[in-house]
Length: 155
Image (tube, rainbow, N blue to C red; front, side, top):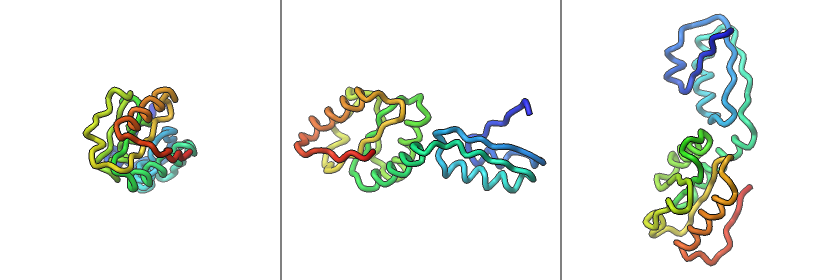
């Protein structure tokens, strides 16, 4: 019981030996698809497998929303630290749907070229991103795009 095994992806789960009993707790910001893939493998390797779903509802909702948003926008901006697992996952999910996805930590990192021939920009932020930084990035994007319309905000 004192030696936890940390599994980050299905490949690591595949490399585990078979065992009689195991409990699984997921990181609260983990992508549900990754957890499901790992659990499917563990069900074949562990006789008595227990899973505690600790993925928080806001995380599941944000992951679902960013996929929809990335599908419908020309460019996606994810605001958040590159050391934040949550922000990196949002960026990864967005990139799966939209190759024009960029992660920034502040407004000064925005590149005007990202918005050329762009009519619709999607913006998301990691859970720990300060509101003030989000506002600065949104305002800078409006300046770059000479936006006069009110934005649509999903919460």
